[in-house]
Image 1 (tube, rainbow, N blue to C red):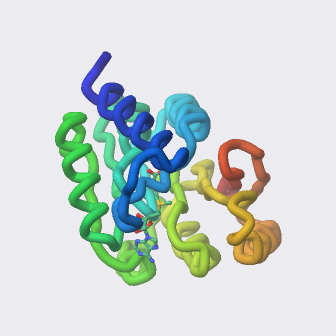
Image 2: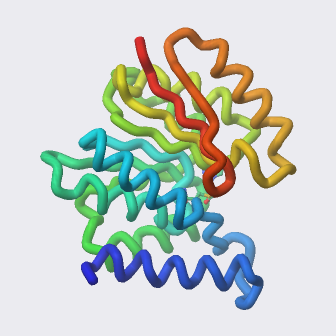
Length: 201
Ligand SMILES: C[S@@+](CC[C@H](N)C(=O)[O-])C[C@H]1O[C@@H](n2cnc3c(N)ncnc32)[C@H](O)[C@@H]1O
């Protein structure tokens, strides 16, 4: 097993234990990751589109970013920017990226996502964006990342179906993006529900 896969296997064991409440983990250290099926779906997708540049909103322990790294490593100049506000999570992600040997292609930006996105250049740089952070601001995140996504690139959003506590925000979100003529979009019932949005113009 390669270095990345062995870290991922450890994180998947940890995530299962956390979800089954078989380990006591303080809330600020909980992984809250995309499901393994979702991760494998995005891994295939990223390989398929030959992605090189990825933006992620919500790093947590780095589980999803590690899958992305594994998918794009062999492409020319691969780069992942991942944004996280919780210093404990950043410390966990950093250790996982080091252990997996992918720190050189992943840049963690620490701070509030809205602040960081507002300061980033609005150039169509990214092949793929994952929105997986707080749900209150998800519509604003989408509006900001759209101009940073290349035409033909994909904006993926986790939790559009589950948990139910997010439904109010996610319904508003999907209604919002369905009215945007620059994208085509649809929901896949995978993991917690994935909105897959392709920028077409
Ligand atoms: C669901 S977790 C991300 C899981 C990760 N994508 C994975 O699958 O491994 C969401 C993360 O977003 C971070 N977050 C939520 N709202 C944020 C905000 N407004 N600014 C910065 N980070 C935020 C949380 O601290 C948390 O670690």
